[in-house]
Image (tube, rainbow, N blue to C red):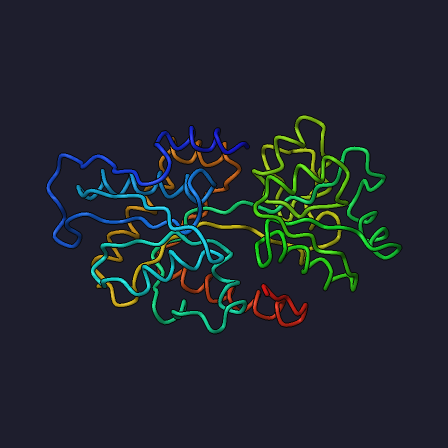
Length: 323
């Protein structure tokens, strides 16, 4: 899905956007203006989901919610702002799998992801998609393993430490093969070079490659999932391809400053969970490639810990560095 389509899907102008205040009076637990901080550029998947979530909070709680894009620093600039901000619920941070990996990639960060932030809710996830050029002789995941053992393949990603890079590294560790990692400034440039034949494979964010698969410019080998995706019913999963451990979802979720009161966190969590059960929102999320998987703060907290541990082990084993 192209950037302009994503922005249109959000139905909001990019950048700093003020959402309408609901008619009802503010809840005692959450009052005033709230910033929903997105540590990525406007128009991306995390931004789109954050805007949908922010509108729900505005309408459900009767408050003003401002979506603020704070991109840069491998998604750390926005996270740092919320981690060091007030502990009153006035800032919410949109996070992804990248933040779980950042705990290991940036051990000397200016804030502690684990200690300075606390989970609110998990919203949805989107599986990674393994894609090759349409003319590639690689037609299956077994072919990809064989090819990577016979020659050094060029694998693109949206940048060092991003989910596509991590998925590539996981594949390499599983099959004891190496690939030449070619990092780009975002997923779109990697798709352009893959289509042009300058790359052999990309372990892609689903929405960045789905349109090219549907147009016939790329071939999808597998979804890094245990279930097939409704938008690609004929594409097998990595589990079906005999790689049940190559399961990677790039998820989107919300956190707040660690000392934020339970009452505020619970209100946010309930509203965000309710959001993902709304038929209209679920339909929009699925159209973007997301599979809704709402989790409250406790379940999400456990999930987040498991993700941090999982990617920490891989980052050490694969010697992944962002420098």
